[in-house]
Length: 196
Ligand SMILES: Cc1cc2nc3c(=O)[nH]c(=O)nc-3n(C[C@H](O)[C@H](O)[C@H](O)COP(=O)(O)O)c2cc1C
Image (cartoon, rainbow, N blue to C red; front, top):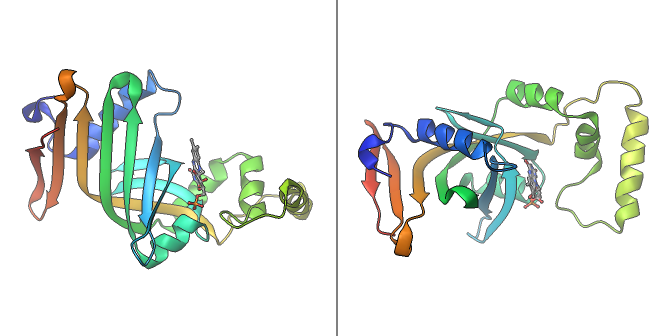
C-alpha cells in the first residue's frame, strides 16, 4: 500500500475496499463496534455497516441496548473491519450521532417483517427468563400487528460514526505490515504512515 496512491479521503478508500471484500467475503460490512460507559469501561460487539458516505458510517440498533445506553452517555465509538482473505484491516474512530428519523424509517421499511417483529419483541441486552419468554413476546407482537404494517419503534434507529481517524492496514511478510492513518484536520484529511 502506497500512501501516495491512496485517495485524499478515507471514505473513498473504505468504499473501494468494501467493494473488493464483497467479492471474496460473505459479509464484508460486519464490523466490531466498541463503545464505553460513563466510567470508560469498554464493550464491543459486531454490527453491520448499513450506510457509508462522506458524512460517516451508519449502523442500526436498539437505542435501549447496552451500546445505545453507552452511546447516550459517551457518544464516541471505534469500529474495526477485518477481512482475513484479503489481509486487510480498517480501524475507525469518531463521534457518534443519532441518524435522522427519516433515515431510520427508510431503512426500517427495507427490513424483513420477521426482523421488524424481533425489534419490537426483543428487549435487546436485557436478561430473559428463558427462550420461551422471547417466543411469547414474539407471538404477542405478531398478534398486535397482525397483517398490518409494523411501525418503526421509538427505541430503534440509526447511528452515524463521524470519523476523525481512519487507519488502513495491509498484511505484509515478516510482520512488516503497511499502516496508513488518516487524521481529520480543519483543512481536510492528513495522512501518515505508522510502524507495524
Ligand atoms: C454478523 C453480525 C451482525 C450483527 N449486526 C447487528 C446490527 O446491525 N445491529 C445490532 O443491533 N446487532 C447486530 N448484531 C448483534 C450484536 O453483535 C449484539 O449481540 C447486539 O447488538 C447486542 O449488543 P449490546 O448488548 O452490546 O448492545 C450482529 C451480530 C453479528 C454476529
